[in-house]
Length: 266
Length: 174
Image 1 (tube, helix red, strand yellow):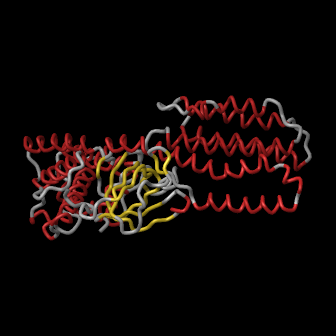
Image 2 (cartoon, rainbow over the protein chains, first blue to last red):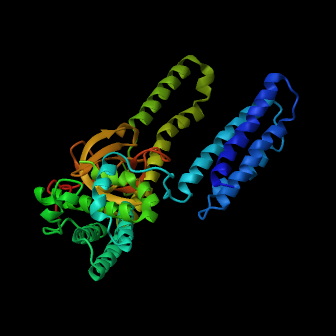
Image 3 (cartoon, one colour):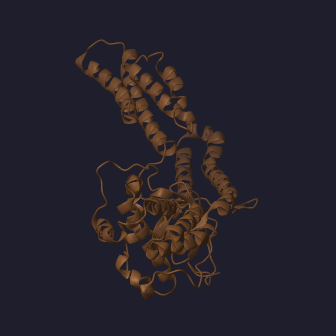
């Protein structure tokens, strides 16, 4: 069963039981509230199961069945108090579910099917398509990895992968501008990994690369501004190469779209 | 106020609560003999309104002081523009200028720090060691989190924010 249905079942069962109790009370139907509380109990076991199947275990979610049995094994004398308890418990389970998904779940790397980049990013990727469509697929995959690892702040890995890409480019040949992009990413990732300030002399794009770059040519921006711009252009160029040639990496690239948009912003 | 090596601050809100309840107690004791007979436990309870916030602040400041070296060893110095939601959970170090300070009076200050590449919100859940004001050049050490814990744009959950010397500005070579 898809995980999303299991996730939805937690609030549906818990709030559903409470809703049934409220409905029974409003209509005057005589019903043992332990049946309605069963919704909260089942939701607790389901939440514990969802916590159990995750690589990182959430002890709070795992122990909710114990609390459900303690709270609902013996109903309260006042039906209204029982209903309020069910509602509060259902709300607590829902909050725990959200916490479980975002603190203990796998990171989001798969973008929704059918989505594409939009706005200026889409325009840039489209403009770069003709120049980069002949990129070797292996190089394009390296470009995707460098972009994604940079987005995640994994600078040491960027240095390694960019180095491998540069070696591959030297052996098979390819667009020189991509080589410069990998060099820039590697150099600046090394500075970030060791928290070094920017060097006086750094790798930059050449004037003839200007047509492929997303932002103003780096030569027009001296010092730190030029250093920052070189990296932004390099990462965006690598994204364009990866997007236009490596279709298998597109879902992950789409998930990192917000990073690309930040780079593209002035 | 220092307890051991730890600078402890009490928020103005806690002081105000103490003052208000002291006034209530004095008025009640003045008009009601039954209240006067309970002063033996009410007065210590009143002082707990100050002691508990101070103790909590001391505990949180100690914990943050212990965490700061761990973060300092793991954090990378990054430009603010590179911080994005793919870095949620990563320790980072940024240097910049403080553009805004809010909620300092609650001992839960929130800053907006800017460097040459952009600006970012910095949230701290205890009082900072330095008295950080607008236009101060600071080094922020913390973890990237979502603004509203489970949703929102990336912000920095600050473990340490300290003022830098004026000549050690953001992005400048040391």
